[in-house]
Length: 315
Length: 246
Image 1 (tube, rainbow over the protein chains, first blue to last red):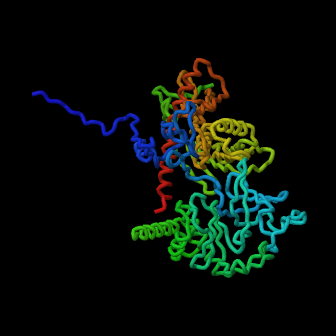
Image 2 (image 1 turned 120 degrees about the vertical axis):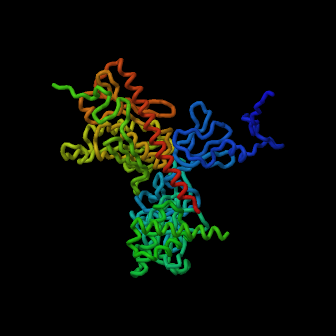
């Protein structure tokens, strides 16, 4: 009796047998799963895929023979239909139109200000892009040009909206809205830009009585709650440099919120208003300055994670 | 004059390594919170700290290049780094400037500078403890820091030194071996494509010995690449696990 060995047949043939539907389209999801590079960790110089059907996005480049996609940063591969990008860990802010950013004036020049927004280049704020006191839209005269420092001087912090970018990569901002403009009565904290998620509004009021402005460029402004309605704002005072008096308990709350945000950013957790609220509650166990210690930060972040998983399991 | 024995009868060097063994490498990315990217690397007893800032606005208008980023490298040797005596070396010390310029030229074709016109990438390297192999550790530390900063590069740049002593080719020379008049060749390599970006030697070497020394250094570079890559991968995996929202 002879024994025959039957080897198992391969599940799919290794050839390029994409299932094409009637329009000749290929299901990219199935294909990417088969090619198996989605959500893969890559490092510079590593080949992502040798399939030239894909388009290359940020963080990738084609090698010399144009035969394979190679990653140029260390990160995770992301795929949207036929576009491959690699998202790196830390990167400077790259703007999108309509983003709220917080910036600091670095230079006052001819009819414009240069603003540092934690990006590859300083952004430009044109004189024609701000609201002049008096509220009424009037032509910018030479007197305005000579008095630019009356509006914004070097070192001022402001909230602005990203307007667009020029050809050479420099970006422009505008503050043509009463909620943007000079920031007062608070404290700035800097986090990696990737941690700030885009949401409907970036001006939040926490239950503990402070306002938090989340700039998408990683600059976060925590300030005393301003209860004034926007319409009641004195138009002459929008460029004033005086802080209102802030009492001790508000200052402590602002400091506590800042330390909580710092703890979240050290552990690379994303920052939204609910997460800040959870962290604030968890941090009440410690005095404010102890929140700078590692154990306190660990405690706060594990509490937040726990709460988030509880919330998630409800849904 | 007594010749120091750099390699003994059993083939062991003064620190116990064989001729083709690298020193132990320890590296850690993202050690500084203020910098965009940073790294700390130890090769044997030589320790180096690298910080990368950028791409950011050019501070001096004169250095602005309209279609590329300007790369600026500064190397400093800590006063406590040498075992002999505490001597403060100024930043414009000629040897350090030369090494800085070598590092800058090594990275210029590798970093994709055309993506960041008119901006500046600053690389600051500080040697905390010196035991030979300055250029190689500076390049390795700068590579790791640039990757941590998320600056796009074609690939890793790994550097290694090698020398030749009495017909033995030695890999990764430490300070004692460098001081003993061995010719030292430093090679910086792109490990995936195998291309050389830096080849530097200050002493005299017989032309017949050039190829074996260069090949040994290239092998050393590939080993270093494995270590650096492993570190980066672990770090990226860890961060992405932490940053996933829930």
